[in-house]
Image (tube, rainbow, N blue to C red; front, side, top):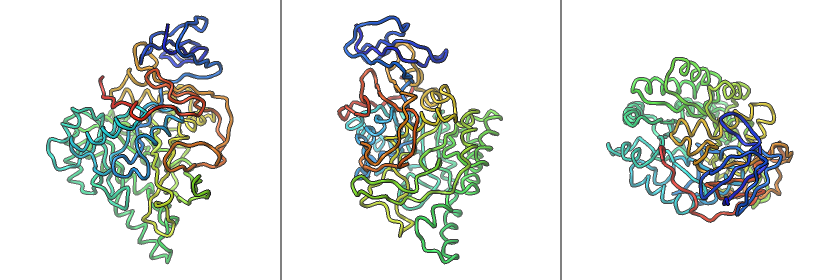
Length: 455
């Protein structure tokens, strides 16, 4: 007898999608059998007409915990991601305190142990003053490192950011010794300041809607990326190219991969793909203006996903408190919005819209990340004796995002109002436990675990 039995689903395997039944004992996949073999179980899911993917993983989320939990925390944020099919997340380090030392990194892990319902592994920040911290955090279990090449209002005003090239160079040398990747938010401070200056020269008020569309331009991000690529090559560090959504930046990554450089790349959905100008606040019952960054080349981004230049697509879930954090009269106020409740569904819909195949969907949501960061096959596979993590999706359901939707983010905000989607995550299974079923998340805080590479 199994603890969980999933029948009649179209299951992802290394040999492609096959109609199989899955038996789970405890936290592990115990059997993959033909669809005509039925077994008793404590719980059975009839996945007829559905696809069974390895559990989705989001490598780039902001859960604001510790330090900014009035915006989001491990519990509300992980519930939001479970809601759209995710089983693991990687919260970013622009926190209070920033995880610059083993002590502060452990503090972040403890917040996850107390509150997360999903498995997690946060990147540590390598630009602190402690000469031993990078090695210590790596040995403790940090899968990779992250910092911001930017200093600006929150979320860029923490000690997770620097524009000091020499400091970046030395951080790269430390990370290189660990053999792990480092992701850097690429940014040229002078371009950012010029966007503000140009508004002043044009006589435009410094509103978010006037400043933001002139930041994160192709020249700004690509010039920074060229510098980072040089420093990575010079130090022998494995570079994780982040926010790779402009044409010239994509071309740089494609060139470096062609040269055999140890580079991985992602683009982040929230600020780049048809970003919401407005989000709906369920509590305030009104639209909130978010503006947007400089528009990227979206068709080229999807081309880069299809040809493997982009290894995965992350959400950049960036929740802010609608009562405190949005103000178009002040360009220094927070930008970004919560995406976790919808991101899995959106990625499924893009596959149905023809932007990539179902096989590529699996690669960009689990397999590539798990392999590159050392979690495979425990994560990112449907192999026997691995974690029973599944995203079970109805690929045919057509629906529209609505202000009446239930969301789990603490912000209680909804992006992409009215957007039509095809496909929906119906079940989220983490280590054999169904934590989301038909849109209802049911899991206590603390079920999630800090997952270490190589375990």
